[in-house]
Image 1: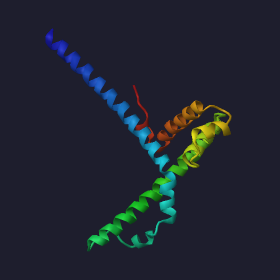
Image 2 (image 1 turned 135 degrees about the vertical axis):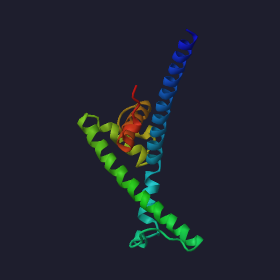
Image 3 (image 1 turned 90 degrees about the horizontal axis):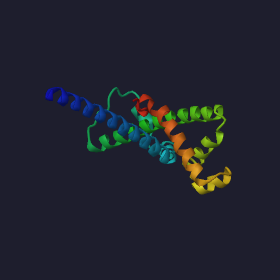
Image 4 (image 1 turned 90 degrees about the vertical axis):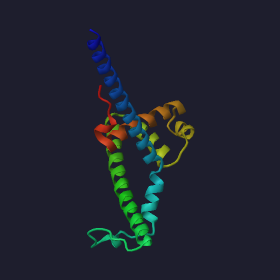
Length: 161
């Protein structure tokens, strides 16, 4: 009897722990999507205006570093390449997001999202532009960011019960 009770309690504890881990993962994914959007313009500017050239990487099967300076330069180039991939992925996901909101007859939600993250307009100003309240704008931006996190991170952004 006691052994059965212990097994049952342990099973319930494991299930609760797994559920909390999934929620934590979803929160992390949402946070990462938000951080990517908050820094989209900076990353994009770094890609466009950065001084490093990716052509430096061509013809190298692997990056060999003969000095600390070479390692630093290679690190910058790898970072730029990663930034290019991230920006391309974000652009594609935002295109899908815009189309989805249009299909749902809610283009104002994407517009609020775009104005907030890409155009750096305050929520109060967006509320005036879209003839709504700042609370509504906050909700729209949050909803669209959550959907974006699914486009960006796939199943990791979804908590299954």
